[in-house]
Length: 345
Ligand SMILES: C=C(O[C@@H]1C=C(C(=O)O)C=C[C@H]1O)C(=O)O
Image (tube, rainbow, N blue to C red; front, side, top):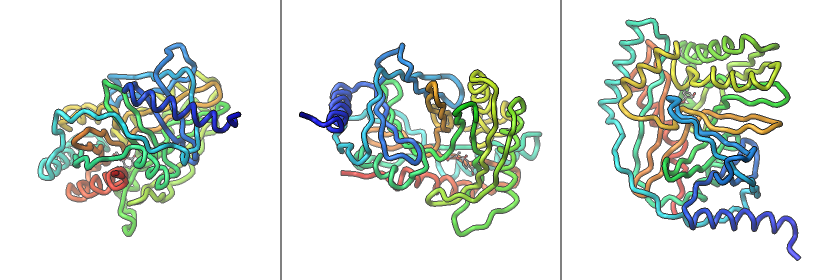
């Protein structure tokens, strides 16, 4: 007779093989500090298991509803072959010169207006040299134990992979937690007033949006290791009086000045008018809600994988004293989070 453990493993693998063979929508993820992978299908709209992907510009809030969630230990996950992916139909990558001009224009806007901060981003395209998705997923798991690591596929939105370091909102027993994550420097450099201010803008925004919560506490900023570089991070927590508030706070927080800017609407208008490409789900958020827990992450350090190219989404906070060349280098560094961990066969 099969042991229960084998049975669980087989259910996961069988379902996963079937989904891949039929090119159905799926989501696999590993939560932070876990060694377990979950497989979610979008197969039962009435299910309580709901995972959302929300676009940066709020134009789409996709709900992924899975009848049954399968789980196995990540080292049991078979490095299976995938269906052929679609080729990319557009080249959305911006040149070095054009990115520097865009950052200069943003700096001019910040100096001339009352906007404090605008987050500018771009796509960096690299060749797909035969990426093995499961090997890459496992590699991201190994390298980023504290990130939320996922692969998400739908016919409409293609294949996304990510390892997000940025908690947007967690709730358990009416205790909500979030972080203020901003400021990026190579490990050997010291923080300057620019990064400290840039991160403070995010902390102030989050705290002001917790005005109707109790016992708001801020711990930080601390220097945190993000692999190829450091960030500044503050841990924020608060108590809310009912579950409805959790959704309300989530909607208020997104998009935070870590990925948009401050004031929110003015920064967003500038981004949509000037960035010159569609962020889609990058800088949006994803996550789930169960009766016991909610967990949402900002969709950062992510990429879309096509048969011919990998599109890496990267950005950074621009302040009036930003240097365009340094901002380019910052996005190059951030692109390594996924770009340097792609594993080929
Ligand atoms: C926008 C990104 O990252 C965000 C921006 C940061 C910054 O400007 O220093 C740091 C962490 C993230 O909140 C990204 O990784 O694409």
